[in-house]
Length: 195
Image 1 (cartoon, rainbow, N blue to C red):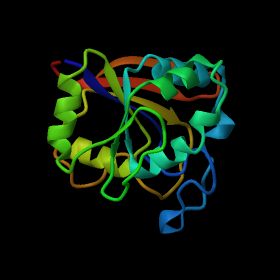
Image 2: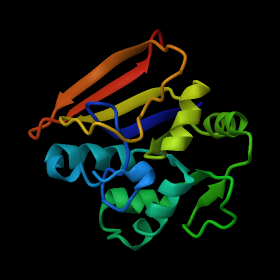
Image 3: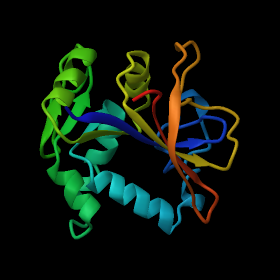
Image 4: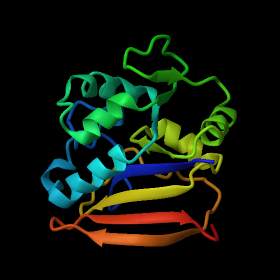
C-alpha cells in the first residue's frame, strides 16, 4: 500500500496561503503573497525537485490544480521534476470541476475518505499533496496523512490561512528528519508517532 505525504511551505506562525505570488490567493484580504520566494535557495529547490520527481502521484485540491494546470504542462520537460509531474497521475478533489485538461488527471468522487483509501491501496508508491489548503484540512481531519514534509520559513505573517486549523483532535507525530537551508528554512519531516 502506498502512503500519502504532504509537502508544503509554511511560515513560522503556520500560514500556508499564497506562497508564490501576490495573486495566488487573496481570500480574506491576504496581501502578503509571494512570501516564499526570497528564501528559495539551492537546497529548497533540490528538495522540492526530489519530492516531486520521486512521487508516484499527486493529490490536489481544485485551486491548486487549476494553478498547476495553467503552468506545468508548458514548463521545460527537460527538468526531471516537470517531466515527472506531467506524466504522473494527478488525483483532484473538487465539487465544481467537470473537466480536467491536464494530462493524466482523475477527478475523485464525493467520498474523500473512500477515494483516498482507494488511491493508497492501488499504489505501492507515494502520493504527494502540494498546497491544497481546503483539501489538506479534510485530510488532517480524517487522519489520512502518513507523513508531513514541512518547509518552515523564518518569518511571521500575522494572519492568513493556516496549515492546521483550530479545533482538530490532537495527533502525536515523530520528527524523523530535519535540515536547515542556507536561507534559514527548516525542512522537517514528521510521521505519525509509532509508525
